[in-house]
Image (cartoon, rainbow, N blue to C red; front, side, top):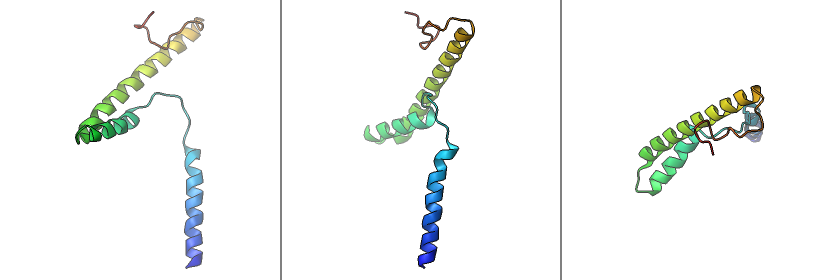
Length: 96
């Protein structure tokens, strides 16, 4: 019994330590999962609208991820053209 418990604990420890090895860190905007979870929590507390909150949050997250990737592509193009000193993070339509 004690041997089986030690084996289960060892496997659990190894699996817990191995999980972060498969993940890569990135500085991207959150997508559907992150905003969907937030929308579900907000919808739940706003009168039991969990599913509609999750759907709206997922849509917002997908839109924000799309905008972030657009801005990253614009910044990369500007860098390749030698305009690296200007701020292209807001996108081409949001000039100051």
